[in-house]
Image (tube, rainbow, N blue to C red):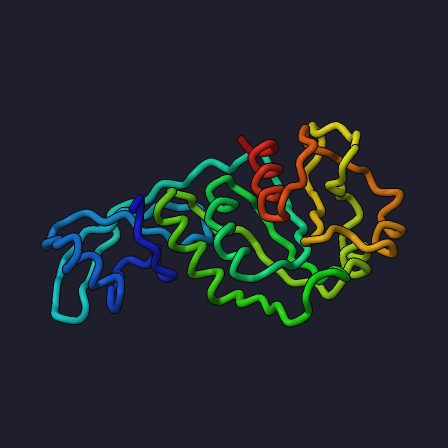
Length: 219
């Protein structure tokens, strides 16, 4: 683990309870005066704390100093037609490690409407991933009702499609279809959008395409 997550990181005296207390003092077996690096995953700052008091169910840490991370110059927004949430949850850590900045989930016509996005659960997955890989912030996430909502809210995005010819250099936002691809009516709505493609003749799963595009644009 590269750092500990606590939403209150940044205060002069930090109280530790629950799972974080168990991890620090039962798993890592830290003692008083130990140094702990903590983030709140909002302000891109790594805080350095020192353990001052340890009790059975709580502990207190004192802020020593902090260091701000430099901002990543590359921005990537993934617009992803909803697929099975279990598959999304398995893919999220990879997208988080690659540095995807924003994920907009959208119900396309071929998305199963019984698929429900649990943002609370996904945030926990992203927090655990960030603690392991060292990412200083969490990607922004949102849920959009349908493709029309995407078209109204976002003007500049490319569409992943076979045979797409748009250059990748200026791509910052990409729409990926769900299993089965876009419907005929959706393709009609997207006909004037720039298309990008991957150098493969194989049929990729939606989650594979998401990771492939993020990899190509961010690393």
